[in-house]
Length: 240
Image (cartoon, rainbow, N blue to C red; front, side, top):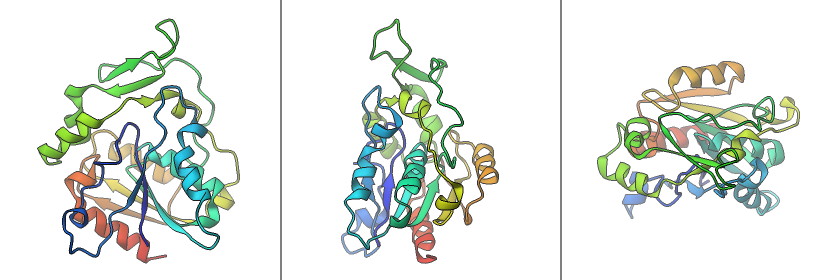
């Protein structure tokens, strides 16, 4: 069974999983298939998750998948848990946002500017920003500080602005009993400077998964610890 990865905000699926399996033609360990959310500037949550929803709806009747959500891809993973419960064998949250119903309220207020992000105004400067992107000078420090330099350079070149509207409208109605039918595994990235371990631990306490694993990596273990990450994903998948 090949895992399917829902990427975080702004991540290009072509470079986000350089594992030993992808580098060695003789390897029999599959790297996850990749699905990138819709990245148009004003995408609401439903549209943002449309690529994953389309993939799940096209699965044959008796097929199930292992879903991996990284970073903001945890929101896409949670929506899939609500909509395609019977199609998911295990849900793996990798340094990911893990909230059973999304954000408590639909926040339509302005995005607060900070020194780390560039703001983009797709609807004009008189309106709230429609997307944001981590500034280049902070990308390695926040996302890739333990990753090979060549990988972080390529990732930075392909990093795209992420639609703020998709996160502000991420709200998933439904019952916790239904989504808890699916086994959930959380992989904590122990040296993460973006999704700091304390923040990850708070989400784990609020919605306890079936199992918690740890990895000695930055926010991007597919670069900084690919072999270890593959092993953890395979271990989580084998325990179905």
